[in-house]
Image 1 (cartoon, rainbow, N blue to C red):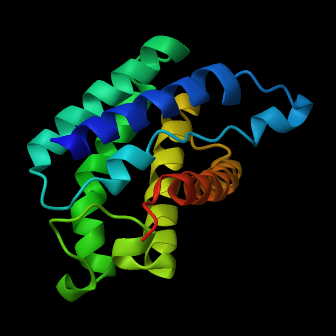
Image 2: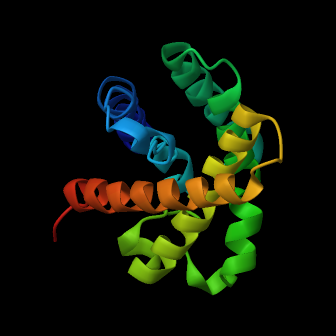
Length: 171
């Protein structure tokens, strides 16, 4: 129960940072390429043992919350539900069952730095790519969307590192 309250607080903090800080940054023409979506951390780090329907409902609620603030009804919700849907199959494809404990949340300490960086980069790339494909709604500049998704996934992973370094309990 405490873990879900912590994840709820983390989502609220990420929502505030996304809406009131990241979305408000004005870096000129670089705004087209640099627009990371950081709130996916919550869905990515939830334990794999969580039922898929519950994970998708949480993703739907989180995405709708972001959409209401960003005035992008459906974009964030759709991309987060896609991440929730693909999370466990990709986790099982990338890692063996012995590579992680399904009862523990996914972070740097439970699955290791390189594993979590790779997994979160793949998940964030999917999240960003799905978001930008739906946002543009055409495939004329697919190479630009792929590059944009990769750049923002890398920025988001860097932000995840910072968040995990702040929130990991020291032993």
